[in-house]
Image (tube, rainbow, N blue to C red):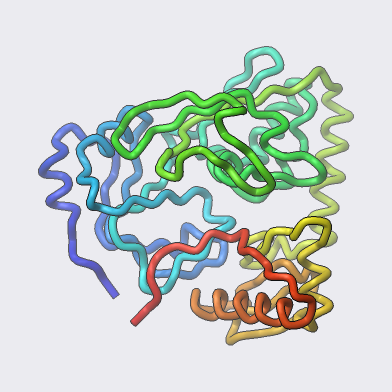
Length: 306
């Protein structure tokens, strides 16, 4: 399937654009599941100013969606209408200032953890257990191993749908479990995290423990989207899924991981529809078995294939 090409028209009204703007660009290779249709237009801005300019010139009628490193993402098989924005090289710098780390939102969380470790900044090791980038951690209050983004964030920069630039402090993010209350149309570009004095060797050992624990308990070498459903209050999603008899359940080449029930995996030739159908089947069985309605943690975007 392909969409009408809107790129030429967009370029004509944005003569000062510096980033890459591509028509009908496949998004499958940008997701960890390796599935999904194309973006009608994919924009990769050069830097924050370029992103601001693009949004200031873009008609409010054109839908905009942002993708990060693609770890917690299902792109539906029919693709994504409008403009899909992906932040790239202009948003991947990491800089240290004492016990604070400034990172662009395209930076993988693990890279922030490593930079902190090398500088003897403690308190950020948990970031190596989050499969994704800084932008996703900000938007979802990403967390792992007892800590969350809200515990270490100082402030974040964002560009709104009209191109305005904002700086939000921790309170402005209105964080809750796997939830950020900042406006949905804000595109985060940079974050500042605060750590504490630590011993590089001790931090390295903590990161090694986290990495080993993930490898021992999660299908990290499979095509997966990470944790699929949010943990309901006081309960574990994987236990509810297991109790409902869903461990190893398959729809086509999509499977509930036998290793960790809250992970869905692509065995090789799954479609997005297979993965999403499997997730909904799991939700239905858990509801029937326990009365609990699981909430998706993975973000699903785009339209179904017709």
